Amino acid sequence: MAGAHHELERSPTFRELFDQTHKRKGTDDYVSESARTIAETYDRTMTDRDVEGTPKPDMDPEAWVDAARGPRKG
Image 1 (cartoon, rainbow, N blue to C red):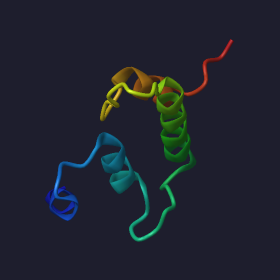
Image 2 (image 1 turned 180 degrees about the vertical axis):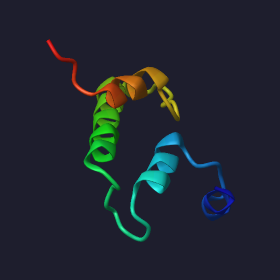
Image 3 (image 1 turned 60 degrees about the vertical axis):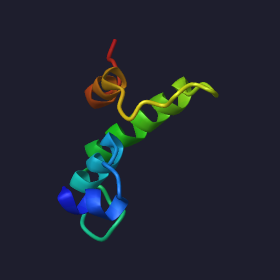
Image 4 (image 1 turned 45 degrees about the vertical axis):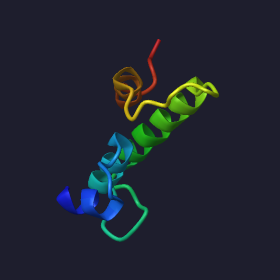
């Protein structure tokens, strides 16, 4: 983790940390299909919520929980 901070010259975002811990080293491949789905769902949610001129949060816990739960059944 300290390496990531030094490399970026700032604290990594939540999403960057997720990628560092859920992608195979040296590749762009997620370690599992569920990790890929969570990341893509979270990104889509954040993009849908994006309103020009408003500050973008580093992390939206509600969006993350929704993404991690997966699609609602029923």
